[in-house]
Each structure stands twice: as structure tokens, then as C-alpha cells.
Length: 428
Image (cartoon, rainbow, N blue to C red; front, top):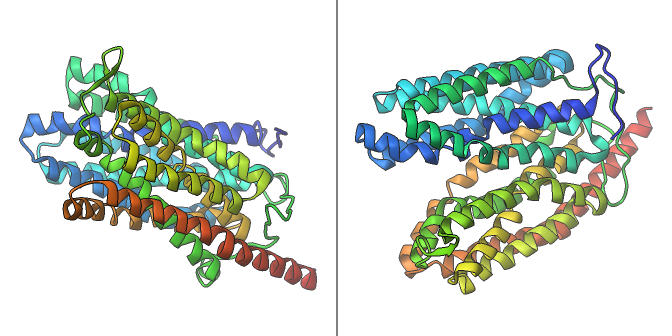
């Protein structure tokens, strides 16, 4: 990658990307490591598992739904102050959140910690993704994929240390020290971040495969386009199917009689599946982002979500064997994690870089909406007596997105980018 030197002597866009990825790694266990704390809190305080998991719902809601506000603040403050100030604030909130959770003796205090955690994580997430799409217009899919991979797979680095600290000192100590250290590192890294000044980063090179606009749309203008709402619908459908798999995979393994069956070296099928799923989820983001930089966003979506639809069908129909379960579940995670690289890239390609942080954040709220569809999987399972119908529905959702990507989204985006070119020429 070609570095672009900053006016203040920073190391360039590759350094900006690396710092963003590291910040994302440091917030990953706020979401993916939460499950480690649930049972210890239940045992210590007698709170019901359902009440404890309300805290997780609060985290997801605030981590998702507040990102447009956080992105707007970043863009408003400008390239120099915006990213640094927002991520620094996120680091403070991340540290404070888990410290509050460590001292929580009531559910209301736990919920306060979860709220602070969600706000802090969203501040970091929105800023780092926004920075990636601005610095790497020429390799936007890959850059956003690497950034999102930090959040998708970063928790794997802290699972064992957290469990060891819990075993030695209890869950409260793990909350306190990991919150303090992670938040402190994020706060320090924040001051290295900035967005590119106009003309500083390499310009996009639009092509028929990857059409990109030459002008930036303000958020209210973007919200008035059919293109955005088609993207939003597609995001909801794929995100809902993936979140359903994330939330229910342990239950599926139990109902298939695989949760505690030994697969290899004394390790259970479910444990191996969860490890494989996390790795595949993280790997999908830069891989499909890189592919999309070469063959186009919509064709990459068609390939990924087409394979994803097949994977859901295979798990529901043929996933009752241990190795089949691991393989097909892993394939599901490999073909849905890339939404967090493909959709922000597509959004910025279509609506420009100036307001990229807030615009991509508005699209990201689709994740929050899709979470409300996840319980429907349990309703369908209860009504039909098994998981087969659930996986047929999720497969159909993925196939529907394939058709939307190629037959609706691509023509809409191509027409919109051509119109922006004409408008730019008219007023240049």
C-alpha cells in the first residue's frame, strides 16, 4: 500500500488503518466475550439468565442505534478533531462501563454499565469504519473488511485470559481490569487517528465493476433515495439470518444431540464449531471485501449470499452429524460476516466520502432492527417442532438478497453514479 504522509507528520493511511483495526480488537469482547460473564453473575447474585441478558440487549441497541449521532459528530468536528475526540470518548466509556459492571450489585447498575458499554463501543466502531472508507477509496472493500474483522474476531485473543482471571480472582476482577486496560489503550490510540484532508488520500478509480460517485450526499439526501432503502432491506435480511445463527447455534447443537458429543482430542462438537465460526466470521470480512474491490460489490454479494443460502439449507437438512455440523455452521458464518465490509463500502461508493461516517452509521442501524427478527426463529421452531423450517426461511432470505443485489441494487447504483458524474461535469 502506498502511504500518504499527513501534514502533522503521521505515518500515513496504512498506519491509520492499523490503529483502527487495533481499536476494534479492543472493543470486540464487549460483545463476543459477554457470554463468559453471564453464568458467574447468575451464580453470584441469583439474577435470572433472562434478566442478565437484558443488559446484552441494551448494549446491542445503543451500540447500533446511536452510531448515526456519533458519526455526525465525527464529520461535524472535521478530519483532525473528529476521529480522535470520538474514539477517546469511547475509550473512557468502555473503561467506565466494565468498572461499573464489576461493582454492580443490582440489575439497574448492570444495565447502566451495559448502556455505557454500548455507547462507547458504537463510538469506536462508527469512527474506525468511517475512517477506513475515507482513507481507502481505491481499496475500500479490503480496508473496511480488515477493520470489521478486528471486531469480528478480536475477542478470540481475550477469551482465555478472561477465563483464567475469573478462575483466579472472580468475574468482577475480570470486568474491572479488562475494562480499565482496554479503555486506557483505546484512549491513548485515539489521538493517533484522523481522517484525510481533502485531496490527501488516493482518489477512487471508478469502473463499471465498482461504480463510485464523484460527489458526496448529505444524510438527508441519502435517506431520500431508493438505493439506500434497498441496501437497508438487504442488510436487515442477511443480518437477521446471521444473528439468528449466532444466537441459536448452541440450541441447535443441543437439539441435534451434538452439544456435548466429543469430536476430537476430547473437545466437544459445539466448542470446535464455535471456534471455527469465530475464525470464519472474522476471515470473511477482508476476504469478500477484497473480492468486491475486483469484481464489484453486487456480484460479490450474490456469490457470498448465494453460498450462504445453500449453507443454511445444508445445516438444516444434513447438519446432524458432528463434522457436517461444524462444516455447515462455519460456512454460514463465512458468508454473513462480510456484510460489515460490503455494505459500508457500497454505501460510501454510492453516496461519497464527505459524510461517510454518519451515512454508513445510518445503514448500520439495520443490524439493530434485524435483532428484533431473531426471536421469530424460536417461534417457528416451536410451531414446527424442529429447526428445518427455520433454516429454509433463512436460506430463502439469503436467496432473496442475491436477486435484489443483481437485479435491483446494481442498476439503481449505476444510474445514480452516472447521474452524479453528469451533475459534476455540468457545474465544473
